Length: 77
Image (cartoon, rainbow, N blue to C red; front, side, top):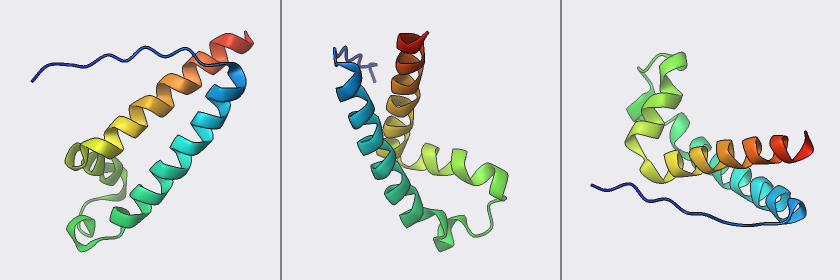
């Protein structure tokens, strides 16, 4: 399996809007699986990492959100 790198150039306004969109998607998807029977016995502190391990599309959103936040913070500095 190979890593994929995506480079995007967005205005600050676009990046903030995209971040809000990504956060909404992440929250909806996490809510769908967070309380499922599959994770009922997983300790709460380990539940998030387990969900990210089991659902690569949610993990991808998580990484995108972290990268967007970092870039926006650097742009404000």
